[in-house]
Length: 339
Ligand SMILES: [Cu+2]
Image 1 (tube, rainbow, N blue to C red):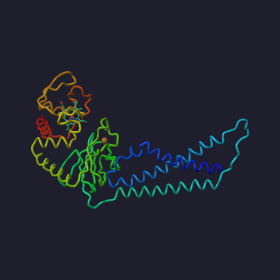
Image 2 (image 1 turned 180 degrees about the vertical axis):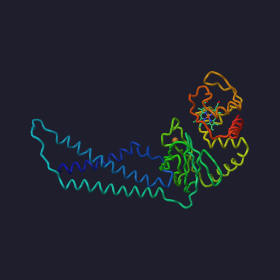
Image 3 (image 1 turned 90 degrees about the horizontal axis):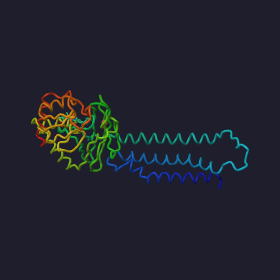
Image 4 (image 1 turned 135 degrees about the vertical axis):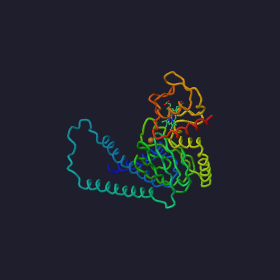
């Protein structure tokens, strides 16, 4: 068998080894957790084809190179130069035409799968998404419901209309595969058809500030019945929200306070609100204050006016110039209920 025959067989072997080796090393699992959307199928398919071509190209380069190094080494005592070769038209045509068609084929596959991913379902319903440093809120305009969890019924397409209150964020649920930037000053759309019930997470995929890594919210794909029960529950909560405490709770959700402050004592980026009202708060300057209306109002109006002990200065809490006095009073009314 000539050199070309041997190299050809080695290239095929190496391609198979590379492709399955990457798979065995867990690359596919790392990149692709369980597929939970209709859009995932064509993306996963494209990815596997690309991995095959990548394995082949890797082998096509590495095998002849290593083979030449080993087989055509200069022998001991051999002094003359290698044979001089003046181009090879056939070879040049081959290595132009084959990659050209490969690239054209992948452009076609890519465009096709983009079309699949963006396919519009006329029955799709809308959820408005607000991204801000460092959490997500979801508004269901049909029901007047605002939530920090995104609940979706299985098998129905949803259009997320996404806006950012500050910097660029990116909406990414790995199980759905599709990823979309959220850009201040415009509304970006994200279409998805969940196909698998379960609890997932949306992560921010655009480095957006100090707590970017914590910018995660739950995404829950429910059965139709569970989804309807959740919506009914949220509608009930929204009705209760007409009281000042209720308004306060809603404001705390809408303004993403709850992304940093827990209501039940859980440690988060900021101090918990549980048993906060009326308690003695130690400040970073060594003094102690009573958490009354005046202190809480000041802490919300100007987070740097006094820093709570053990927390970083300047405060990572953003100021909220848009909150009115009444809104702040409502939030405090809500904080008072947390004991
Ligand atoms: Cu972000």
